[in-house]
Length: 329
Image (cartoon, rainbow, N blue to C red):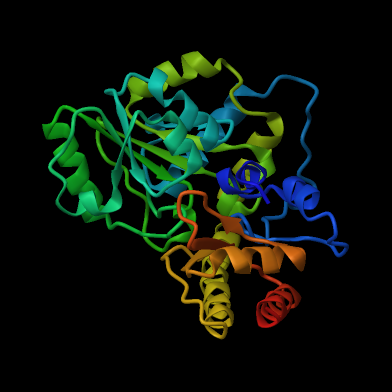
């Protein structure tokens, strides 16, 4: 398989269409473990109707942002809804933050796309600040590294002293027991709805920032930044505290069981985020192709060929299928 053919699978997870084309001999249904999206999505209650005929209600949008702000633990005037955190990432250069954007790597493919420079994660241990905007995922993707609020506060202070900004991508933060990082006037935080709630197709995210940054963002997105469907489902999901707390507990247990399955095959899982696990092994390419031949897609990395990221399945049958595929290598 050529590097170009693999490119569709290394830039983003969730490319089952590309996997089917590359491994056309696979007949059984594919098991997609290439993303960190919750495999047990939040389910809308009966009677939650969405009227998609009129333009989305502005007061309903305001209620969604208020519910999200309460969930994040930040003032509502610092929260704006966007059509997915991926969109917010691509709009960052237009929001008035200091340039250049410096992405901490390894990280999301989109971070690398929008950044003009890169630094390694090890550089953050004694970071003294740098002009521009430091872009960091927390917990990080793909390795699940998690940095404490105290460490983030030190990074934000160092950036401010250097005349720069800190941009935090907290797409996976809902799965963590600690609250996300609010920050100050020179900190921008991106949050995702789809990953924790298992509803990536709703295309809903949020930007947490100073009000003047949000004014520029709203000017770019217009009066109806998200759909009526996203408003209705997002509002109901953020208000569902019972589901949220139960899911956080369930994710940790699923990750524990997943780690045990991987360990049986000599694969030591890394990462603090229970939605995905990363392994490093010199046999990564062999394991990737073995699993793909069995109809199981995990995430490879072009810039780190010894790494694989595994989404955490919920069904016992899916774990048994993964265990069996790993055993027969």
